[in-house]
Amino acid sequence: MVKTSDSAKPVMNNLYLWINIGTILFPVLLSFDKKVAFYKHWPNLFPAIIITALFFLIWDQWFTEMQIWGFNSVYLTGYYIGEIPIEEILFFFTVPYACVFIYECLRAYIKSNETFEELYRWFTLLFFGIACSLLYWFSDKLYTGITSLVLSFTLGTHLMVIRRRYMSWFYFAFLVSILPMLIVNGLLTSKPVVYYNENEITGLRLGSIPVEDFLYNMAMMVICIGLYEWFNRLSLRRRLRHQKQSS
Image 1 (cartoon, rainbow, N blue to C red):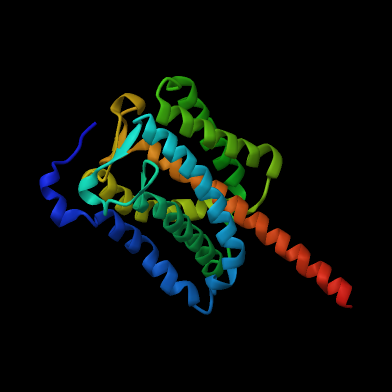
Image 2 (cartoon, rainbow, N blue to C red):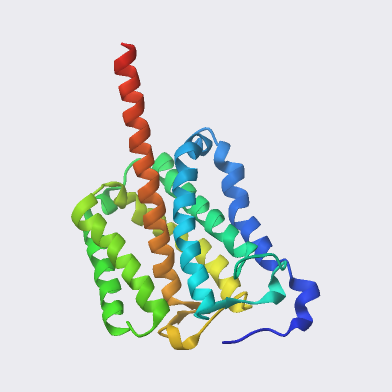
């Protein structure tokens, strides 16, 4: 594991906070765009984000205690809850918000999604197979193994139980989100703001980003969007029930 010298701390100690602000700034400002009207989705979005964040924060606390990964104090403001810096906690709110925003923008501006509509089950099977293969070959590496386990479980559930067509839009959104992810995770891992125990990852990287981060991000998006769509369906059922009672 690599840590940067504390000599840079006075200059860079807000970097992770600024990354969070940059991640969510435009999605929040554009949430009031008339075509997307993303702010109208907040009542169903925020519960989905909170539940997703709680799951990943428990995971984060465990991995930090186990020294699977850590955070460079040079780039932090110095506020922690448990072992987790406040910036890392914000990350689990800013990133899901931005990802679901991308998801809804695509649905609002691109009406036809024929390619992903036809292939989304194959995409699910492909990534499920990748996650299962990594779990089999790298189960001794905790970050790789646990991430692959979570992703294979969530994708397997969607493949065999949930079977919702919103997954076609999910893969479209995931593909688009890779570009901002390369920027955000690239900054986090190149400084590094976040560093990893090399014994617990495969060592495969895209630039400075471990390949596990892409699977981790996919798992987070699947869970958050799945919950978000579930809350959407509950809201729709309540509205329909209310309309029947009123008529």
